[in-house]
Length: 457
Image (cartoon, rainbow, N blue to C red; front, side, top):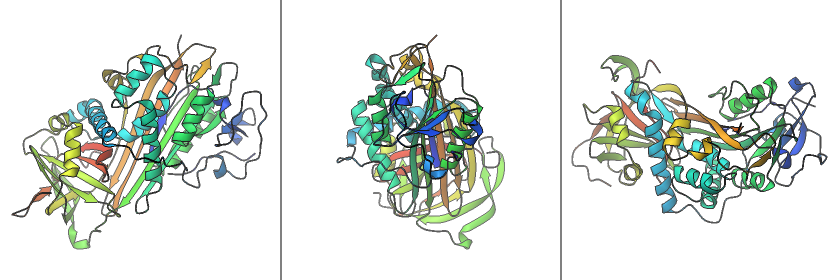
């Protein structure tokens, strides 16, 4: 069999868990580095296997076919769009997660960015295996949206992103299961929901060093090499990894001319030090002016998505401003934007990573980490499943051409044991600022972060 190298595209949300997905997949041979000692599974919409059923097809046409890496994941778009209530809940969740995750780093003068979309999709898949109070706590932490409504909302957003025409999105999910039918057996209902709502493929793997390499290769390819790895080892009590990847690349709707690019310009970082940067100057039509902040939205091609920048009042610490954000403010920034404004944006690139267990528990998700009920996900011989860690990595590149962004979230589960402008306006991002990549249809942030420094990112 050919090596199951996994190929392709931006933000990766990797929810590492323990399912026994033998009930969910079409069995394939393992990658070459496994020396044929085990099998790897891929899930198709038509195939549901139990551990002792033979695989309907052991052939692998080529490496990319194993993961669907050569094309975008196809998931049916639901009949109805998410309503205003969902987006209100999503924005509240996004603001709270951003504050709890990034506050310490922003106060230390570091750059920080999360993808609330990535984390919600990873934890949304996970929540389909939770029951009782465990499920309730996960729903509340994700904004209070009931799981059935959350599933259809994620299904809609996945289809919307993957069908975007003027920017490049790729949303892909995969599930990696330990090849040990005596220790874990997946719930067919859980597998069906992961597949139908999240388009998840699945792979049965030995969970040794070769699986670490395969998972990281999949993430690397799905994020266009922006996030090279998400895990460094697989614990002995790990049973499953759920991996969600979201890729984004957008070109500016209004490209920059050479005369609009100022090399060796000045950016004053959070320590008051001057940094020399390449600055991009332009006039935009989406001015933001609210109490304590000015900003703007610079659209990407197609005008469905945009880069939103928020500059706190002079003398206001970026972390203090970020801590004041809530869902309603995020909505108003996009809904009330209007009028011409002269702006400048520094070119910047940075990576960020964090472990979210503490933050999620502070948002009310306690039982999922402490012996909660995940019996809706799998039966495990070694004990009940629980979340061990939630790893999150992001990457962003902004330059004169546009923006690329990526994120990965790993949920590791173990077994228990319009404004009228009278005068010209200016928003020059030459000191610390907050930003987001937003869906202009509904104002929801896909990525949200803050920049304290350019040169040390």
